[in-house]
Image 1 (cartoon, rainbow over the protein chains, first blue to last red):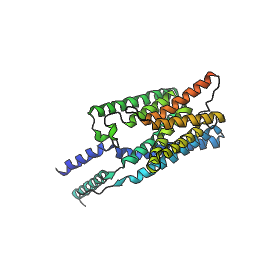
Image 2: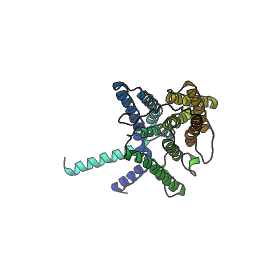
Image 3: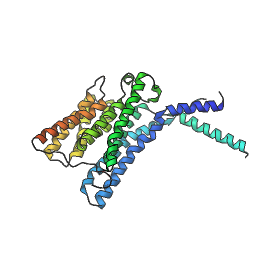
Image 4: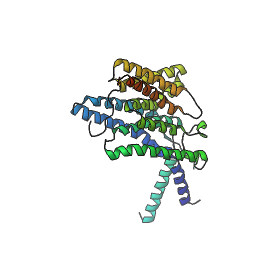
Length: 85
Length: 231
């Protein structure tokens, strides 16, 4: 196999490993959503004085804590495995 | 440096990146746990603005996603889609729909058919209580794991329903948490716990709510998540 073919084969393998592409989304999406809830509750709840938004604050905290509890060990298990060529 | 040397260096650099990417290894156990937690971001459904065209999209998009996932699962089970694409599948999922399909189905049923006050804590149970019970089971006795799972579920129901009357909060915590643990505990060949942990407490609470509505008692607290753009 020449260099070009090796690279094409590597790209094909990489494209099939969906877990690699999903990994950043799995961690970032819930954290972003939790932060959105927190910001929304703080801006609407505190600046406009609407007590209804305290629920969003609570939910944002639950999602943020839950994601960190399961997301941090997950990220820590992602590692580079040195392979022999 | 001439153009040929520069091209060689760029190619070497690309090879190195490819090699590095291919050498990344992901732990299947924690991948599944993180996938559960990730599902909580679908609660963004309730944050979408209350505008006619978005309301139509709120109905169409989840159903379309479920149909696409269903087709993917049919292809996987039929053998026309390589199992390599599905990372972290358990052995018992090789010949039946995978957990993520059941999770998605339960999630969409809750989002579309149940009031937010019932759907949100049930979805949170599937996102966080299910993996938490799994972790507790590794480290503690089975009964202790389920007891902690019950308390965690009750905490979620308490957090979402705290605006309701105290007796209602007590009943909802008891019914919801029992339903969640029951949904997680009972195992069926063709029904996954990811579906049951969402639907069992939701159906029990729906019966409770509708039953009391029959006696002109409205127990639902105000919704927790408000569409963007203000109440």
